[in-house]
Image (cartoon, rainbow, N blue to C red; front, side, top):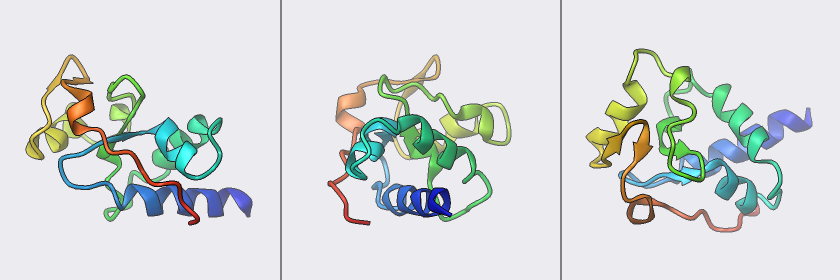
Length: 109
């Protein structure tokens, strides 16, 4: 199924996000050559919540909002994971997003 292949390509990029960095759904979509598919990247991330090797907490919306936080167990798990990597979060938004943002390379994955 094409969707499964897309999801696997998303996960391959997410696994590359360095510790202490974040990226956005749109940046992942752009790196995959499907710039208008940020929402589908979000669906992939929603489906990854039980995959321990996919650091889903490092994917936020373009403004740095923790838009996927309700998919994590516990009330503030996504925020806690980010803060444990040195990323400050206030009101569900990353402080100094530019400093922590990781731009994925255009991929052939």
